[in-house]
Image 1 (spheres, rainbow, N blue to C red):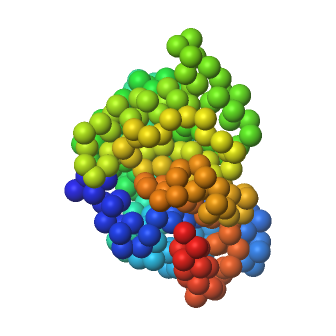
Image 2: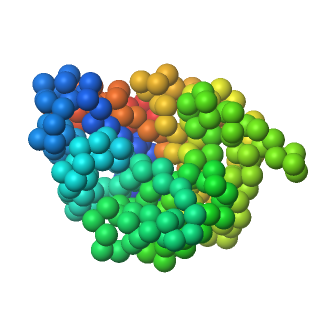
Length: 270
């Protein structure tokens, strides 16, 4: 199956919500866990128990695992494996971006068959030029995986680059969107190149009308993004939009049933 087919099936079964696993030290503390590799593992595997088979896609934030060194990366590998075993799609939020052989190595790590860090998709940064992503784009397509490319992020500093205007009059964000649109052209039900467009950006000021791929919308929930914001930004049917909630759900842990109930409430609100 292509990534678009996998995602369509998952969203059809569970709705469009993507839940993040962000083991921030403050969340570990609120769960009564120590900021250690052991606490990280307990936190992450509890989240896997709650979210596996419950939502369309789960997004572990790689940095919070990498902060614990090799033991943290080992936990991330286990999270990816157990979520995939549950039938839940995994988007590894790594935001990798580089050139040449280095980008090819990132592609091998996060998108290649047999790699313990490979989920079903990975976030990537295009700000060394969209063409620098080619190794990741090619590997994703050949293995039935996806990439989500940063376009208009929810952090206020992002506008300094993303809303700046290129010599041809397009914003940098629109240029990225246009490249992604071209890459997905003609693919059904949708392409394997997604975009990251924050739910709290105010106005998009970009043309997404021809885009044939998924849109990850972080900032929904704890960061202030609402369902009304999503509908205003992406249209009332929110076709292809994957609202992302992390802290708003995770704050209900460590009780698994409370986490599942929190997910259900968010799913019903969309």
